[in-house]
Length: 218
Image 1 (cartoon, rainbow, N blue to C red):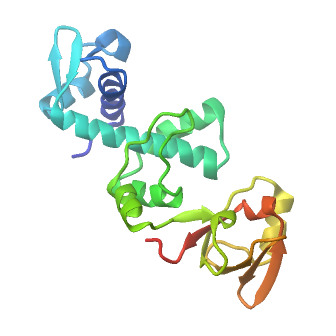
Image 2: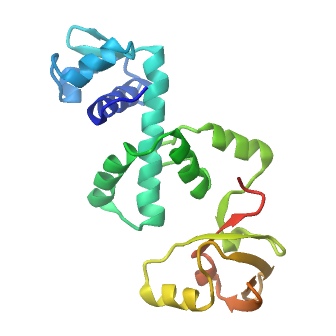
């Protein structure tokens, strides 16, 4: 069931108050809403919340829906920081916008791209999804930096995590581009890998900025 952005924001705030902060409900004042807020009333009609006086109570159906909203928001925060290198209030604002665009299929792909993170940039837990549980049970590593690969491991370059133009140009000149196949041949004294028919050597710092979707990852 789809919800408006406003409804998702309310659901997220109530979920945090009840599940994480241990309150039995959230007040209208804390949520910055009034009793006639259309999004609030829509959530009540959908039986996700219950209204008593000036407080909002989370129903069991709302707990599940709220958890998904929180998961999407915190994955969006990690995406802003880890991939797009956005930090601070700007990153949080962008994450708030982006979370509403993530449906369940997209959030699974982003979670896999980020290698199933367990916390957001603020240290709060990210509710695990089915993809996280499947990755743990099958020992699939997902997307990892080159430094976490073993000699002989191979995969597809997922992305380059650097905001430095010179570093990006250097990697691109080596043929280190998203979508290209890469195989790690040696870890010490430098990281030696194959891309295409060529072999290259980089230091650890540069190797940390090459993220690879390993071949056993979904």
